[in-house]
Length: 172
Image 1 (cartoon, rainbow, N blue to C red):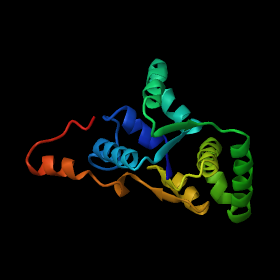
Image 2 (spheres, helix red, strand yellow):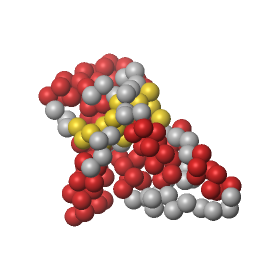
Image 3 (cartoon, one colour):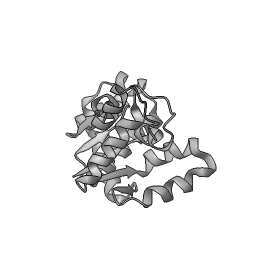
Image 4 (spheres, helix red, strand yellow):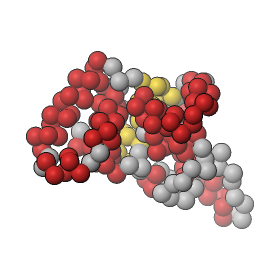
């Protein structure tokens, strides 16, 4: 199976001290990656999502990319010709469905990034999009994909056991 991580999940993966919408976010993401890796599932990282996070990493960006490439579960995937076709179809379908007010209220750049991420996800055959961005998740669902946020990712049992024993994990 293939899944997609967007910038909100990458931010916590790259910097466990990043702010998150739920408690123990780094442990949730680490546990998710461990479960996916064990099943030999692939985690697709669309280049638009990677670009979003690289802005905050400045000159350390290439180091993080090299780290990702060390793990076989991660696949960085570009916005290519096939994704462009999917993007165009998604935009057209959304324009046909949406009220003009709805589209105008969203930042056009954000809409474009979200659409590119979902287009790449679809072209790559991803079944689940992991994002803490409610608009991106809603669009993924519109496109027939499963979409989950941090709150949907359980804290690994071993982390819960540590917390119940009075010990906290570093989460990294």
